[in-house]
Length: 291
Image 1 (cartoon, rainbow, N blue to C red):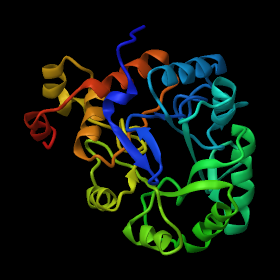
Image 2 (image 1 turned 180 degrees about the vertical axis):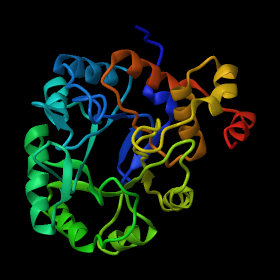
Image 3 (image 1 turned 60 degrees about the horizontal axis):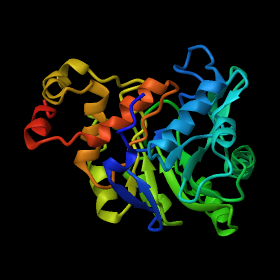
């Protein structure tokens, strides 16, 4: 197992103005299960992945209470692997989706249900205050549509009570971000975005200008917008890298406000992802990836 990779090589961002985090972090969604319809993973492997991630310099972990399947839950694994938490470890979570009978998110919580979801995260992570809580809006469709005001205001009240340090929004458009900002500060936006999914480039630019972190979900093309790896081939070959590494290096190169949180439940993939921090793309590389 390699030891010469470190999340710190991807640079640092001041999340919410007071939480320094490495821009290359870790997403916990794939710890319980590799794919939406895949088999439940061994929790012992999840614990090992989390501990190795921290060894490699990860200090920003993105999770959610609803990242669970068949008795294996990401929050439980994080607490088991890493508690008592080291100073400087930032754990972000998200609330909004409600699980149906199949264990898949099938509905959205109303304002009066969000306190219970926040408390679920506090309990399962074993903390008294959550570093960052996103309001996750909508289902599997893209951003836009419903107002976020009532729900974001409910989270803002919990922030005032001291249960939450910073707030974020996920799967939102510019109008929904404006709604949230009219209520309370927004530390981070989490939307779908990767090297071949750039629909939110303007929102990213706005976040960079305003000091808001932009944290893509599916940074390696999971979900409904896969990456065509053949379009990365020339840059992959030039750097002697892998396509996921180039995809992550591109994210780190395009904006200092962008935080990458690739997720995996496999140790080898973790090592591969963290190695992306040492890849520095040239203007020629960036131009090639525009195609």
